[in-house]
Length: 247
Length: 321
Ligand SMILES: Cc1cc2nc3c(=O)[nH]c(=O)nc-3n(C[C@H](O)[C@H](O)[C@H](O)COP(=O)(O)OP(=O)(O)OC[C@H]3O[C@@H](n4cnc5c(N)ncnc54)[C@H](O)[C@@H]3O)c2cc1C
View (cartoon, rainbow over the protein chains, first blue to last red):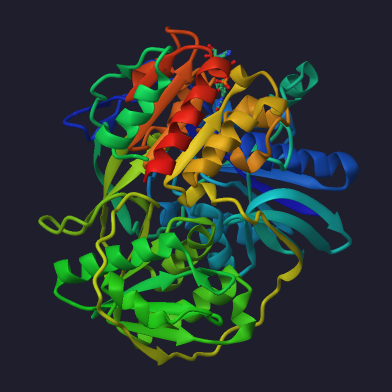
């Protein structure tokens, strides 16, 4: 079985969010870059678990990004991918990114493609579904558990207000979230071997973008907290009822 | 040209987020000088004409039992046909688990640019620009859609509804659709609880509550207020509470009217999932807890002393009203 895991580069969760050039550019100075947590903790680690159970599985990683994405690709290889493909392009348009990944995926006929449920910077939550449409394959979103039985996948996914368990034949695309796997830390052997694992760079296909980012904006600052004395919690209830009209 | 709003149902009932999408769609239609239509797939238990209350003129209903079961591949095929036959210019979804699976597929089918997580009406002064939430609620971005057909999926609780007494016309819709590849083995709905993503009020607990045996303080207040319950990440990780209650940067992002946090420090990753809430209340015994900086109201105090008094005061309030 061949698995493709989509890996995106995002700012660290504690990164300061600031914009420059008239709010048109994200300030990257001092920002640490990480593998998007959903891609790393759930999608990649789940693929690694499947391979540990069945060593005949190969895991490929794909990233759409510039050369500055290579450190996080190497980290993903250190965790356990077999080889990586970097599609040499920068874009914020989900349609463009998904089209690039689909073009690469078509060449190898993967049985399974994993993505994270969303990136923590753009919060688009659309790449997985778009890839499945480009490939005309089924898509299961928000998966919380995954196992295989021959040529069938058994997947539990979140639905609004509960969960559902589905059986579905390969090939398919799955977006992963909490529950799929537990976060891991790369070990020394992984880090050493990642240096020599193949990282192939391919040029993007020509395809138009459908959207573009015009500007950013920070939310307005909070007015400040109104503190109520701990001896008089009833006052808090009064304020929530009469002033905030929240209860 | 018209606007098409995808209405999604749970057990034949229209979801709250779909009413918001309907109303939003009607506002987009009036901006563009056209009509808002809605589409419903699968059998309905409700009278769909009430979508008129939210500004929908016509409801296209494809009432077929095979469609009661959601499959993104099947739904997007039907929606694509509907958009073509109705000459749709803008499609509106709710940005929930169903919208997130269907809207992107439709985007590819129709080559229609998608903005997911919209929080405001499109601005038309310079193209078609939609404001959306990014960086897990820490910022917004304005995204321009260049394609002819446009798709917007709306964040829940981002847009308040004004209802009217208008009634929509309901017509049958039919189209061919592919067979599903998905075989549903089981579904497990959390019944009796308010769904967290759509809740108006959320009561949330953190590690400061010391153990799952103390969660009565959270659930009792939640029951009194008709609220949903949530928790911080470590609380879900150590299995004091189920994973679906985990809010924050790596859990669910929510935007209720009231977020009530008990014994949660307010780490940046937690705030990322809740900072779009309208009113934030923090109960924490540490005056230096970072959450107070993001709060509207707070009490510096021990939750085990403060919460029973708050619960009593809410009971009193409820008995008066
Ligand atoms: C990449 C990454 C992603 C993350 N994603 C998330 C996420 O999505 N969601 C999330 O929540 N966290 C997330 N975290 C974890 C986050 O950094 C914090 O560790 C976590 O939110 C802390 O949870 P807490 O506030 O419940 O616990 P603590 O930090 O232990 O805080 C407990 C609080 O309770 C107070 N307290 C103690 N006793 C009492 C009492 N008797 N009465 C009143 N108050 C009391 C304390 O003063 C303290 O402020 C993430 C971290 C990382 C690194």
